[in-house]
Image (tube, helix red, strand yellow):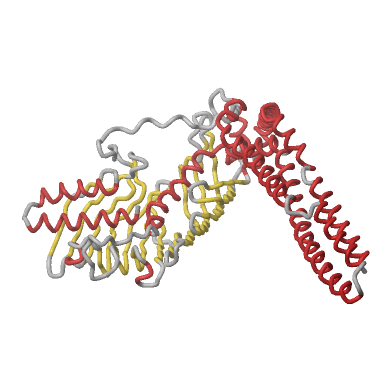
Length: 546
């Protein structure tokens, strides 16, 4: 959305200038909000607009851009967005500026009213809180119903693999020298025996050359047979392991494959996924969209510069509220353009910040779209950050809270096209954890509260792999063993029961097909025998001729 926001700001600037030219500031403000909202797909509000000419300077005061994905949140809000811009370029729908200033920037802030275009309230979110104390795991039948298409796709892929190999060898076998072909070679040799010495020598050489050519073909066929035999073995193993593999895949999808080692992931699962997905969505809608190259159509007027956006530097200052404290930051984004080959430079980002004048935050990023594939690297470090009153789990059954702590966090992400790889390492010292309803009748909550009472250090490690669209997240912490001791026995029991039911149901539903697949494990033996017999006959004839 970075590109869309810049294009939206461009339209706002153009509308603002037109409004001032006609001395209709109220109308200009109205048009800014209307056109900006169309560009973003959510409400855009601005308190006031300042414009001066020679040079053309545009400032939007009190800019708020709602998040179209989460209407009760703002994508960003800024006290002021200002720039000296090329007025001529603006009217050609280009943003050309040496420097843009974003002051008082905040990201992902709460709204008091919905940011939807029609102002309607979004539907309430379903309660996805963990039911850890009672550990209600997904129903196996419901899981199978939901995953039926995926499982069938695996069965079909195995079937297609066997069919392809079988068809290939049926075609290859038709080209193998048959018995009649061998009889022709024998007949030629018998006729040569009755020739004179010179004719017999010349004819024998020609016959040997023909047989050698046939034998070279057998060398290639035997190599192909070895490769396809390995493929048949692999397909057979996939078929045999289908119930176990598909059961494991389904449990992994729900974050249940890590057992007690991933207990914290099970507890925080939806919230961890939401945070990661929110960041990836923001990446896709900002820097990700910058990679979408737009071709200029013949009907568009030729621009003096072959770009829509060309900003040498965006200066940023703002803050985020973390654990009730303001973390102030400032920095810059350099060489922003929708066509990086114009400058032959990647977009770079560097932010620094902290609380109470202490340097605690470091963010660096490189976004390189000079080739067809957008490559990005993002690093973030937080040191000695004081946290308080942070909710770790919103579960109504088991609300877990970090009452206080001193955090060190390091995050590293790299994206190559759609491929994603990243890690987050977090260490919280002087930690105090609370289970807020431990005073009630919830026995499990009381056990957990007692187990966490002496914890003074929280260690969390998260790895993210897969793709931007479908990230695979693993989260482990030093709390896993503590939570596992309290809840692990029940979880292990139910996990084993769910996995057993999944395997049994899969075996029942796909047993006949799996059995047919097992029958195909020797499907190439006839071709192996055929090649062996034909090759042996040719070798015997060659030996006789010597």
